[in-house]
Image 1 (cartoon, rainbow, N blue to C red):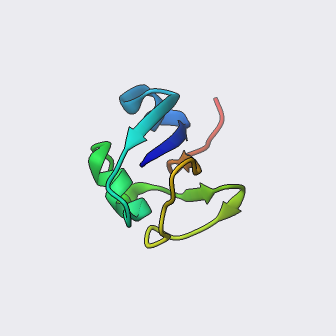
Image 2: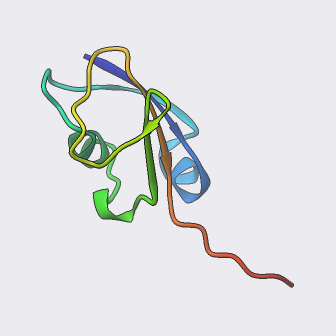
Length: 76
């Protein structure tokens, strides 16, 4: 199956801002993250088809995923 992925922040620099990933049927977001070389525990926000989910969420063909890493703020 194919899943559309949008990445932000440092993940976009590492993986790319938009990626289409090919996975086996029955894969979870954890499987997706591992296939992309991302740490499943290092993602702050996981969005699947517009809803915030956990890394255990099951994926289906054509799903849209957004991955947001932790953001550290401050000011100059």
